[in-house]
Amino acid sequence: MPKLYYGPRPHVRAERERLSALRFERIRVRPAGATLGAEIGDVDLGRLDDATFAEIERAFLEYKVIFFRDQKISTEQHLAFAERFGELEDHPFLRAKEGYDKIVEFAKDDKAIGVENAWHSDVTWREIPSLGSVLRAIEIPAFGGDTLFADMEAAYAGLSARTKTRIEGMKAVHDFVHNFGLLMSEEERTTHRAKYPEARHPVVRTHPVTGRKSLYVNAIFTRGIEGLSEDESAALLERLYREADVPEYQCRFRWRRDSIAFWDNRAVQHYAVSDYDPQHRVMDRVTVIGDRPR
Image 1 (cartoon, rainbow, N blue to C red):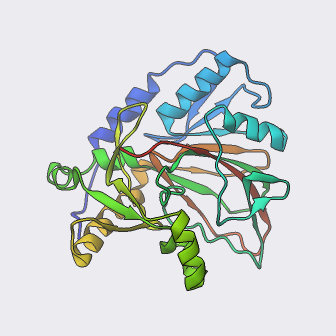
Image 2 (image 1 turned 45 degrees about the vertical axis):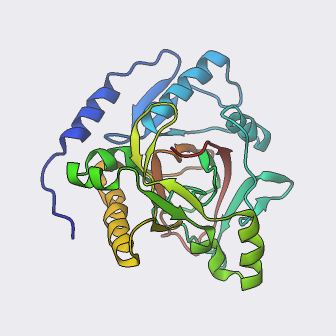
Image 3 (image 1 turned 120 degrees about the vertical axis):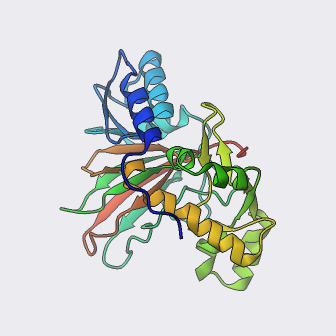
C-alpha cells in the first residue's frame, strides 16, 4: 500500500507557476487546474487563421487538455480542426456517426449506458496509439456527465526516486481484449487479434514534442508488465494506476452544448462520469493518430 501523502506537492506548485507565466497574444487562456487544463476563449474553431491555430497548438502542448465553449461548428468543421493535427483514425470497435467513418458517436440513454467511467488513455492497445481526441457536445443532460482529466506527467514527477528507478525501461502489454474483447466470441477475438496484436509500450513515456516524461499505463487497456510475475505486475500496476486518483493532478470539465474538449492522450488520462442515466447524452469524438511511444 502506498504511503499517504499530506500537504502540498512541490512539483505541483512549480508547474502551476510555470504555466501561469505563459503569455498568449491571439487567444484568451483561463487555467482549469493546477498542472493541466485551460479554457480557451476569443476563438471560432470554424474559422482559424494560421497564427491563431499556432497559439492553440501551443496551449494544447502546455496545458495537455484545452476546452472551448459556444463552438457552433459543423461536423465537417469538427473534422477539419482535428485534421490540422494529423491523420484521423477509424475505430474498429465503436459505432461511427452515420455518414462519417472518422467520428465515434457516443449516444447514451437508459439502454446504452455510459461505461467510460474508469481512468484511461484512448486506444493504447494500438501499436501506434493516438495523439489526442477532440470531443464535441451535441446533446447534454440537465445535470451530470462531466469529464475528469488527470495529468500523468505530474503523476510521474511525484513518484519517489526509488519507484522511478524501478520502472525506468519497463514495458507494459496493452490489449483490446482487456476491454472491448470481453463481449466478443472466441472467433471474433481471434479475427481481431490478427489485425490488432498486443502492443508493448514503455511504462514511462517521453512526449515526442515536449520531452516530458509521463506514466503510460491505464486500468482499461494495460494487461501486465513484461518480465514480472503476474502478482508482481498486478501490484505495481495498481500502485501506478492510483496516481491518476490524486486530485492535485486533476481538472474537471462541466459540459454545455457546443462545448469541445481536446486532450493529449500521450500525457493525460480521462474519466467520463456516469451519473446522468437515464438522461440522454450525445457526444462526437474525433481521434488523431499519434506516434509509436518511446
